Length: 168
Image (tube, rainbow, N blue to C red):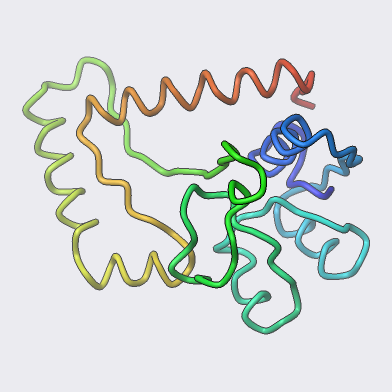
């Protein structure tokens, strides 16, 4: 199982899969996602829990075979590819990007930033571009995003503890 390095999202997603299935895969950390993807493309690795944005063109060109997506729902970009959860109930591993501000940022500034960013994310062209590379918009309120971060932190902390992952 190639990864972008120890304690990276691809590594931890693979460890969650191992925990939930009992499958024994040896973790082979690489110096970044590019080298891990290259190892998979070159046959030096058999599996990678990599980002869709990095691998989708290789999948479309039939250089890689997508086995499943790790999101809760199928991807609009690859609708024929099943979710891992369809054969491992409860499995979900997705990365996200968000915007944060210092704790002392005035609430009205936070609300305005949230409103403007969510308006951009609602734009059809932006949404279409994200969907084309396998992304999904998750437009949340500041409070909901805070709750989401807490939930994700708790979930992945458990995986890190159970798999005894150490940053190197």
